[in-house]
Each structure stands twice: as structure tokens, then as C-alpha cells.
Image 1 (cartoon, rainbow, N blue to C red):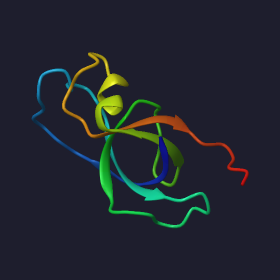
Image 2 (cartoon, rainbow, N blue to C red):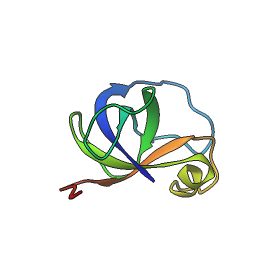
Image 3 (cartoon, rainbow, N blue to C red):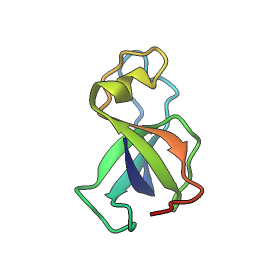
Length: 87
């Protein structure tokens, strides 16, 4: 699990089976100090995040498990909205 900041949205008119109606957001991964820590990625939104929001992301196979149905072709999923980070 890692942190990211939502920086945009994605519009896709055609999707694979299982991702109909799913929302996709552009996310910049960040470290614990909220500085960018990797390339920008697209994540399926499971937490109703909005642009500018700090979010928790899950990657790899676990990202697919956050979806319903639980095995769809996604590499990143937003699984929570961060209220505070205490380091």
C-alpha cells in the first residue's frame, strides 16, 4: 500500500468486461512527506476520491482484488482517502 495525490481524471468510452461504470483517476504517487515518488499512474477509484485528494493506493494483484468483480485487469486501485499522515 502506498500514498498518492489525485491530479486528474480519465475518460474511457470502451472498457473490458468487469470495469463498466468504474471511475479512473490520474494519481501521482508520493512519499510520507508528500513529495512525488515515482511516475504518474492511472488507478481505478474505489473510494470516491476527487482531484487534489491524498489517497491510499494498492498495487499489483491486490489492486484487482479491491474491485468487484475481484479479478479485473487493473494495476492500481484507490482504496482509501487519507485524512492525516503522522510521521
